[in-house]
Image (cartoon, rainbow, N blue to C red):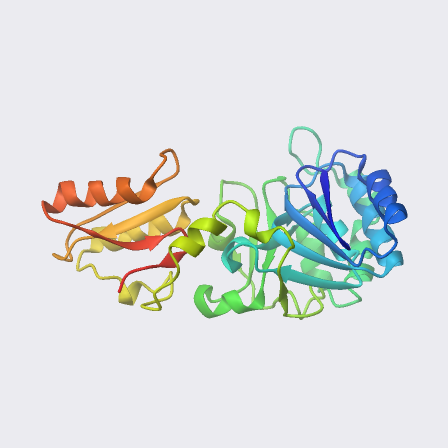
Length: 298
């Protein structure tokens, strides 16, 4: 992982390669006042290191926070925090902690390693005894490393219906399209508080400047299909696909309420590209409905 220091906060991001324990200890030696460790956009990696860094952070009594996604070995670092929080660096429906087992190089479950590492009892301990034993047994037995029990902030249940989604990893799955489970991160000790914190480098993250340039209009929540100004089943279906796409992205609509256009990634100006696609179909001027994670339509 890469480590960046910002005052009394350190930010760890990227794959876990095995050097992180020494790196984190060195950071604390250089600044004993570190009180927040942010874990950002990591699919995990070397298993042993996740345990040891998590244990070190618990002994240090610091707070951990997830920024973006934190999966596998990263999730054990996160559980090490005495206090555990989500950040508001990214939208809530793209900020989550994912738990599963240990895996061999081919992506298949390594049951011997899971048992040897004591993963089951470790999770119960570092969730402060709140993890559901049956659920933990399920996630440490997921056969493929692409699967995970993905915990989002409890508030996403207001738009997604649930905030925990269990992916078996057998097929490619968007984390929020997997099996919903009726519990949440606070109840199960994944987080200790529903507050969201902001990372000190938040303003430099990709997409933050666009979010400021194209703020939400207040017209509708991003996932509110009932407010979508289209009278076309095909258009609504395309908007649902748009919601699954990664930013940068833009969705445009025509006054006809029958035409639309959207683009994600792969171009320098997704806004202009989405408008052009819409206008080519509608043969009239279109307007932007959504930019990235904001509805900008009035």
